[in-house]
Image (cartoon, rainbow, N blue to C red):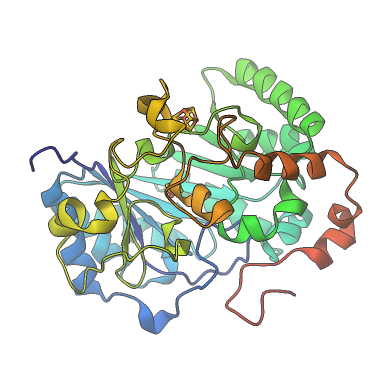
Length: 373
Ligand code: SF4
Ligand code: FES
């Protein structure tokens, strides 16, 4: 494909169904029903077409992908296409026999998420008491012969427990732990004033991360995903728009990143209407912000434009309503005050984010009309 980059990753969001209700979920606010989901044959076709495009790895995600009874068939199709397969899971619903059948189908790796180091923090963030199921899932993943990768989303309500979170993951045998500071889209943006940490809290956590990283070197890899609100320049989101990866949502809509579904100003394509090659190389949505031609100033004349690609299009849209503006995280953005104002609020005492009050104020990920518990 002339001048069009080749994607290497497919995020297959096979369902929005999930037993958890995380307050920072990256799924769109308008969650899809089971009846909207692509069937097995459509998913198999999507996987084959993605492989034909050059994709080399597929991440099965959701929601909770284990909810889908046909997950093994999708994993098997991906392996037939010679793709590396990874399962992104909450661990709820993972039994020994399910893990065995997924491995038989060709599953290569699994990433298990936790919300904190104990049942209480899991309940506060995910409205679920099932921390024990996560410990069981970690054991099952290792017994199935898969490497145990773990992930925790960090924020104001759990950063002070970072040492204990790392201890839990180490004791469960994790080989790698991704410490993902919250990115503020979708449900996380709804809950931003309760989740955004203060500068002092973040600095303390960075100290813990650095100490533990050195201590655990050679045993467990720690990866720190930057809290971009506290950075002077934005992250090079997705390596640039429609450059390296694509996401297929449960209903077959295709996006250049996992959170673009909330970008209501754009018309995204569907696998019901087009094949993946057309979507990737020809659709207007995928071409809209590819490269640097689309950039307004200050990005257009900035020496960093090939480094961060003007930041995140979803963040620009979420904060300004225009996906074509410079990411407001950037100190040069005319909208930077939108991020600064949130940080000023985060540095003030926030009674709304304390204990039981936080629980009452958080908006939990649920279908419309039942988000507040
Ligand atoms: Fe990046 Fe644009 Fe900011 Fe320059 S002005 S640092 S390209 S976001
Ligand atoms: Fe969509 Fe950054 S999350 S472009």
